[in-house]
Image (cartoon, rainbow, N blue to C red; front, side, top):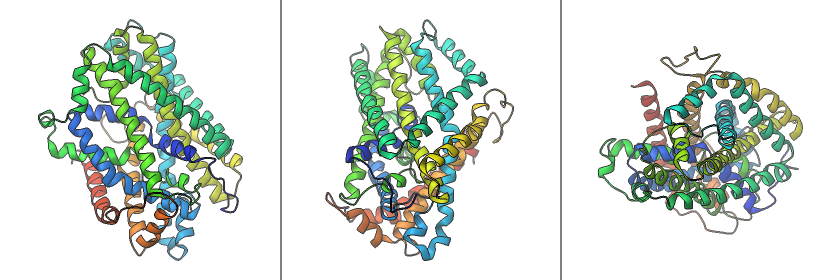
Length: 460
């Protein structure tokens, strides 16, 4: 896939929706609500929004700018932008591609859970079950290797089939319709939750900052958690955003485009909270239920609602769509990266990736049943835990640190080249205070996230 005949987006809206679709995933509509629940509600949300601007936005521009300037994915952008220093930075490209593969090796399985829950909810499988019954149903789903492999295979096959059709005719077209449908569905669900009797307490918990609410976790852990969420919500560090920059022309500034993508991503995350927290308090459910909130707690909440089967099915439909938009975006990075490295056509690369992904993803899908005796990190850890550790605690923060250094240091691309690329075109220019944010604050914050993640994972 040479830069001479590289595809481009058919519209600006397509770029914004596709880039936001990459960021809008399970981290927004699953992790964000339970992080808010565990860290005191409204104050966590406020701190998160601050760090989204201070940390997330500069790193998002770094990925967009390097991709657009090179017209390459992370696989080869360094050798295009800084050919004399390519050897110094080439490992970053390999790590980014490796991180994308690792991410999809467990994300396709989790996306399969969303698809299975949508089908089960539509079929009425959760009707009449209490929380224990829903939990047992989820555990039974995990224990069935055929269901786990089936969900993963459907997600993988559908994702690479869309990518094989091309940027405009496949990826952009599919994501436009899915994102617009997702936003409409979320608005309907949010309005329904807002009018639930007893939901006012949930809205107050979610939207009203309170220092008293964070006494349990403490202010410093809450700040670190909010900084962590602001960083991870945009899927930064492994080049999943750089690939979309590589398909952009230079008509508009990247500061304005990054603002649009970050705003849409944040809107969806906030909207997910508006759906979940009023529903929790309306039916007496604690909002700090953690990861089980989606798969165990909420199906029980829907059972108590009038027309609960309808609302539950709609909820898991939007969860499936949110997960699949991320799958499509990261698959595109894999397909384009392989094409750049080999010179293969898009379809040949998509076929190769489509054959490899189910094989590589199988250990995660089987980690809860046939491979449940395998504990790679000790204790009760699973294959998913290992892969999540390698991506979330290592590849993403280290990769983001490298993007920050590459765009601001003389040994890399350098600030002047980066700023010129960001400010090229019509639209708002990048404010001057973003230089210390990307060159000083971002590296320091990422190191804190890296150390905190390792400390939390291993109890150091």
